[in-house]
Length: 158
Image 1 (cartoon, helix red, strand yellow):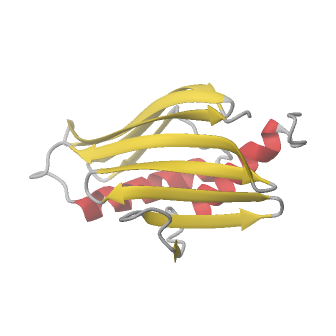
Image 2 (tube, one colour):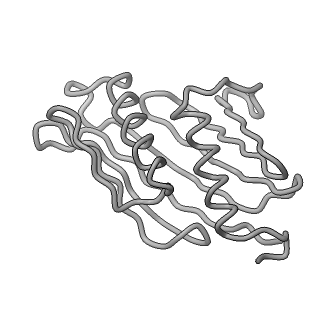
C-alpha cells in the first residue's frame, strides 16, 4: 500500500481501464486543459485519469492518474511516423488501437508484446513496472520500421 491507501494492483487495473476507455476505446474528448491540447478523461471510483497531448501524426503527451484528486502516477510519451511515404497517421492509429486493445485484455499495459496485422507488426517493449518504467513501441511494415514512440513514467509521490 502507498500513503494514498491503494495497492499497486488497484492502480494497474485502473490504468488499463482508463487507457482502454479513452484513446483505444475512442472515448470522448474533454475540454482542452492547455492551449492546443487534445484531452481525454476517465473516472472510476476514487481514481481519475487525464491524457493530454499535442500534435497528430507526430505527437507528444502526458497521462496523469489522480487518487482522491491528488496526482499519484504519470507517463510521458513522444511518437512519430518515421516513413511518411509508407504509412498514414490513420493507419498507424488503427494498428496501435487494435494492438493495445489486445494487450489490455491480457490485463497489462507495459511491453513484452507483439501483434501482427497483415504485413504490419506492432511491438512494445519496456523495463520496470507500474512504479517506474521506460519503454518503446514501434510498427514495422514489410520489415521496415515506419513508426515509433518512447515512453516513461511511474509513481508521483509528494
